[in-house]
Length: 82
Image (cartoon, rainbow, N blue to C red; front, side, top):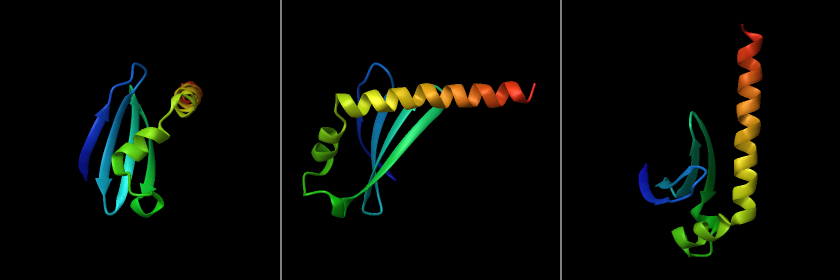
């Protein structure tokens, strides 16, 4: 797996990887992470720049919201074990 780019964002770390004819976009926030795999065949040839266009404000809002839900789920599961 090869790191293609890291995108600055105030709410999370965004890393773009390339592996086996796929791009992987990984979002990290503390101990949580989300990743999305995109086949090179699904792109029109724009490569990394095309993926950067997918990561717009609306998509980032859902990623950040999902992190909040993930954190709630994990905290609830942790409390059930105490």
